[in-house]
Length: 544
Image 1 (tube, rainbow, N blue to C red):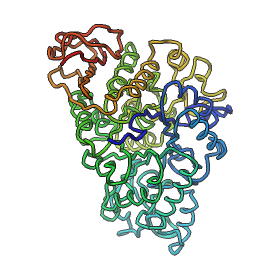
Image 2: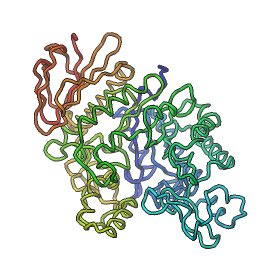
Image 3: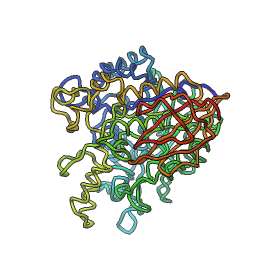
Image 4: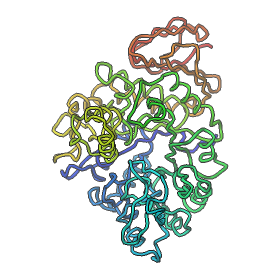
């Protein structure tokens, strides 16, 4: 394998609106981020995935961009952005920009021009269609609920929006659109960014007339053109958000010979607690056996033809410690378990802000407390469908995106040290116990577990390059695997259960060196290993 820098580093996602406010307006900003770079350096990460900071009217919290070459006023200025890139680089940290090129804001100058008239030069920058029998062109639906077609009265046509109606989809079949995107990407690459996270990139090859959205026939042609015209000339990391990817599809994106992206985010494991044929809001208990099967498949199926991303959390997902762990009595143990299990796998790990201190979901009791557009749309839609308010709130508390977006909990002072003003989204009330200051002061904290895992990846080639094997002969609730590299073998075991579980694998021997664990264990006997609730450990085998 080629030793690109992003294969041995750990990426930290910053959701800037909720990270650190520097001016008291209740909204996180770039200067706040600059002030926290030393904290991220101490954690040990090598790159920041920065959620969108471009100019935006904020219909979808920055994922609706009105100017790709300017900064949202609430976040600061281009000078602040350039300083962030410089200051991060001085600490050995690269800034990976979140790039949204499937759609823009309806307030982007291109779209303002596009809707002026049917013969405007920018009309074909977006996807316009005539009505069919007085209705929408077809039955495509928005990911944010309802039809994906919005009627424009003045022109008598519909435009496509796979997300909010304020997020019209760009027409990638138009070569002028692609050239505009290449020019913009090169603008940022020349400023020294470390790459791009490509938002819903699997949608840019859509064929709307055939109701094809993801993985369209020209998608990979477009990505190869992107590579040639932009980041292929730079030593950067690119990761595509690809909700429908299988390992075979992921190889198309990330096989180095194809010259497309460095890796993709696949979400197969994330959907395992969703009821078959239902929406994400309709959940079920996590089938641990399926989680083992899916993550193991992604560990082995890519081989040397692709690269894997590793994550539990992001700005769109509920907090993992609340979702699949115990976020009360065993919060610390649960948070460490998820960290140990994931970070010792092959691939590039991603930490979402607050994950490294075990931040939890933040339940609401009323829709008035909800900010997220997806949750608000679902609430209205399900009320009309006959669901009770109580049922809907339960779903939002389990899966709503605001869970991940509450402000970062820095210390026990007012507003968790996030802002001196009123935060844009309420702070989780548990911030007085769960915060960075408390974790930094406690050598046995979740933070120090993450810090140690990042260090292990840097110092031990087995973590980045070792082979992976799932251990099958263990109880259902135990996830156990072996990493092997140049004669070394590490065993990683995690108990997903709320009760203890016993593992008996004599072939691993009766002793080994504990590399990292979450219960303070010093002795391991694989012939009879009793794992406590949410216990996780990694052991260097002395013999196999």
